[in-house]
Picture 1 (tube, rainbow, N blue to C red):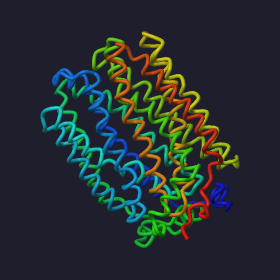
Picture 2 (cartoon, one colour):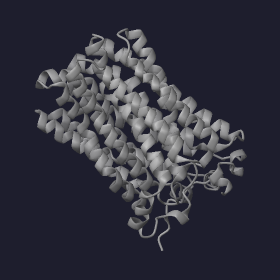
Picture 3 (tube, rainbow, N blue to C red):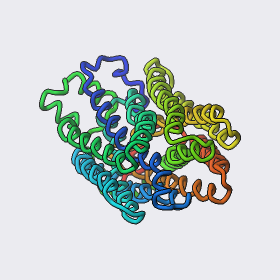
Picture 4 (tube, rainbow, N blue to C red):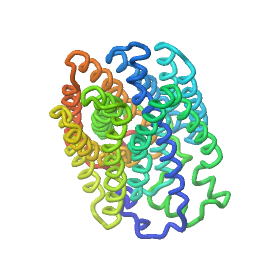
Length: 444
């Protein structure tokens, strides 16, 4: 294994000579934050929408899930497209499309048309996470990818800290449609910002905006070449589909995502229906676990992991400890099934989400760490496609369990079982966190 692959590159102790890469991390985080506002707004508006359209909890669960159907199906094609033509133009077009889809959700009437706009939003937002993973592989040395990944992964959690109370206020004051007009406007503003600000590192080096020393710091630390594209891409992709390490990472991350999206979609409803809170009170209580999740994501899954690796600790051991340990702490989500006390419920869910969120950026950063040169999009597409199958199931399963039992208890039990399965996948299938050798995927 090369020094760059092990994370112990001499660049770890070197000087970057600039911080433009952290501006890119901030741009990625802003995009994912706004991206998740588009998902949070339906969760917050769900109860109001359910009463307006006379939907059952199961039907509302289907509406919650609709986004993930098209989002999941688009993951592998989008991943291959990102590997083929790069992130810049794919993300530019996608941001305009997801802005349009959000505006349309506010404009249309009826369950069928809202379902269509959510499907369109899923396609438009499909490049979001995998393009961020691929951008990280371009812009960051391997030993800094934890904090960069937590910048956009933590934004998904922070969207609930800001988004849930904000959308609750908008829905309570102006109605559910106003929440979509607001998030659509934010999406359009980000689309313009991305078109103006983002370029690949080699392009910015040529124009002088990226210093030569920072460019060397990035590339010598193990960043992938944005011009690299696998030959015979589809055959190469088939080899990745048969790789055990890819499956271990993808299955483990899918199990995490089941629990995460169960809480993302149903936490406001759980607080309002089972713990009898108002929309505004539930929004404020719901913000607490997401604050813990955001801090855990940034400070443990990002900053702590990178600091330990920079201090000379074994990169594989550090990442595996946080990846698996965070999932174990995530089992506290089971506490939501055992109490009717708002304070205890928020405490259990804060601990569970905190553990899951510490694990998440490590799992996401592993996409670029294990992917062969030029194949981050393909590995990210596999991981995100499988995750979306689990994500699509989470709100539907929970919704029908609530309909049949009158309680959210079994929803939390299933989420905890999925977390335990994720721990097993990381322990028994993933193995060492290291780049898949080219020999395992090379096509003759």
